[in-house]
Image 1: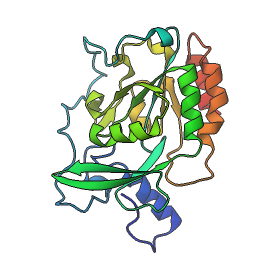
Image 2: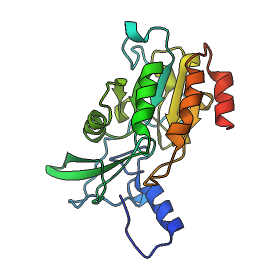
Image 3: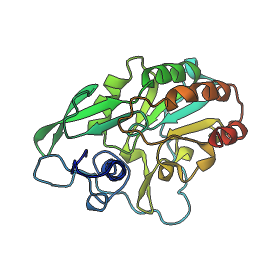
Length: 248
């Protein structure tokens, strides 16, 4: 991940960064080489879990056991917000970042590598507000051995009532999809916040799309979303208001 050629134009760099996150270690797509991600300085073995069986037809039926535990008493009656990690709340790289907010050691093939993590501007305020208003769930297509320690450092307030990782995704037409029908929550009361449309392809009407974030310290998207979510928290059925949020 990160930059490979400092002589590239800004647009080329942005395109490269966008592809970099799509490595098997961090995120949603299966083929490491197809997305030209910079690997960590290791023996270049694959870092991904074996992909689950390909789902090429209709979305699969929900499992007998929901992905989430029963709603706690504190969250009873609240809508559920499912929040992505990479490029939505943070940006991570194997290459050193001078202003990294976190440096997370991750063991890969017997070698410990440092992952440098930048927090998106206003993420702390956003998460605290989400924790007040909703039952919040972290759902990432990244591997748990990377995402779990990042979430530990990011979520100082216990906002995330549950954390779901790659093994909870459905592998569908080459993408790791977050199937909201498997959560065990009433779907009309579920909202997903994600930078990748492929992640919510089964339930686009439940999505609040966000722009992918890498290192723009002037970004205000999370801050700008807070008033919209204050309205969504009061909705019995989120669909009509989500439509207006997507059209903003």
